[in-house]
Length: 153
Image 1 (cartoon, one colour):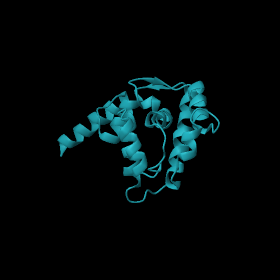
Image 2 (spheres, rainbow, N blue to C red):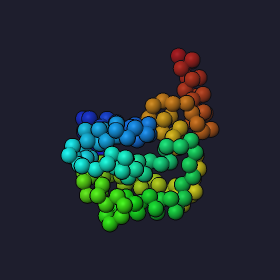
Image 3 (cartoon, one colour):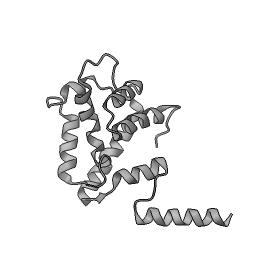
Image 4 (tube, rainbow, N blue to C red):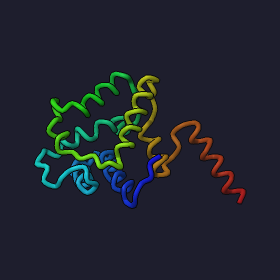
């Protein structure tokens, strides 16, 4: 179990929100604020964005199908110190409190890849994090149930 300290989840949410918005400058600023990047990193912001936004590709489109191939290539890109993003990997700092979240992201990505799961992952994330509209049958059932219980009060 991971217990978030004051401000930890909020700082990570700021990075995620900027990634999902496609906001390169905002992502870099939020990553610096959250302690993932040093202020004086000296790298091209677009290059950094391409690297750190990779695991969130499923949430950047309206529909995405996880595959074993996608998961394998995305994970390889993240850990390849000699690859195209080795310079980014060397300057990034993963604060210890976020390591468990990274493991969850990759564990779920691997599972969803094996299942070849296809969905509106962006919509699901917005529903969960921001109270967005339901995008699945289960979400719509829950939404209807909540509405009926609010009316009954």
